[in-house]
Amino acid sequence: MQKLARIVMLACAGLVCASAFAQQSGQWTVRPEWVRAHEEFLASDAMQGRGSATHDEEVTATYVASELMGYGLKTAPGMTGYIQSADVIAPMLDGHATIAVGGVTLEEGKDFDLLISPGKTAEGKLLQVAAPDINSATVERGAAVVVTGADNADSAMAVYSALRRKGAAIVLLVQAPGTENLPGMLGGRTRTPIRLAEQSAQRGGATLVLLRAEAAAKLTAVVGSVVNVSVKELADQKPRKTYNAIGYLAGTDPKAGTILLTAHLDHLGVGRPVNGDALYNGANDDAAGTTAVLELAHALASGPALKRSVLFVCYGSEEIGELGSTYFGEHPPVPLKDLVANLEFEMIGNQDPKMPKGVLLLTGWERSNLGPTLKAHGALLGPDPYPEQHFFERSDNYALALDGVVAHTAAGWGTPPTYHQPSDDLEHLDIPFMTAAIQSLVEPVRWLAESDFKPEWNPGGKPNGRE
Image (tube, rainbow, N blue to C red; front, side):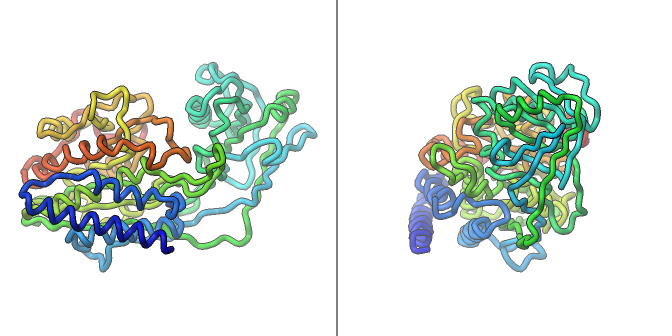
């Protein structure tokens, strides 16, 4: 704890001194040492990877809340503090799942890794498909599919998504050299149907298994048989909470609406070791986005009063199903109809090689006039070069977009090599790039908060939930 306290004191001291200097200079400048100070704390080993719905997430939210308070932000309407918490139901498994088929029994850890388990049991008739043939293959609803030829983690998850849409009950990926890191990318432990306590229990989707080669050979010998996957939940399930940190900058015109600036503050915690490292620091994902929210709050709160209110929110539990943003959407401190726009920040720590130098990608660029308008006012934003990845639908902005709010995510490199790896640490961040990107947004966001411009969806741009 002494190490943690020292990091906090150094970060806060640097921010206070630098902030005073910036205010005296008369022109707001985001300083790289401020950006690095946040990252030194958020992505430090002391934070143990900021695991979703853990005590480390609570500490993270407390840090963010204290920074927002220090910048002069107030509590949001109807709130008595800067943290919004919610109860979470998170089933834990005993780690001894089995697969039974045709007299063959396979054991978790020895023969396979159980990556995703929507329920206590799953069953389906076994068939085999090569990864390149997935889209054209005939797959009966409820089938168990052995997949060969998925040679990297991205293609493996694309195969899983395709088979889930076809209605497969079980997807059994045969391990290849490029898929060995897949368990770590998914958090290092089996994903179960984690939900907010106030949500009804829902089970569904497809079980995902990563098979060792020897185990796969045993299954391919019994194609046509019925496969059964069995798991057991631990009896002693510890109660958990998730935490959103929220700060509010009140505008001078209550009827002008509110701008929402967001990121997620959690990451994967401690998971499966990669090259001997099991700590997933999450410096880019999404300490970088959290830093952007903090420094925009720092800048806007230090200037003159704005016409529109600005709400700064860092969500918890994005990594286990966007639970923090879901709870916020169900319990917003201001009515959703009053939100002028939402700008989410996700993984802004590195330059994307497909983007112009210094420019962040904005998901769903063509869907509304928000991105082009902010760009016209100096924001270093541009169109997302990865439409096939559906990033617009994969971040915390999407739930609000479904509710009609013009909501987009600004990101750096869409698919960096450090994504969901222990190597996503401070050493692999581009602090100058981050600083310049945040700086470019200060005046455009200030303009948006002072203007009468209200972003609108372009024709056909508003999502309808079936994409």
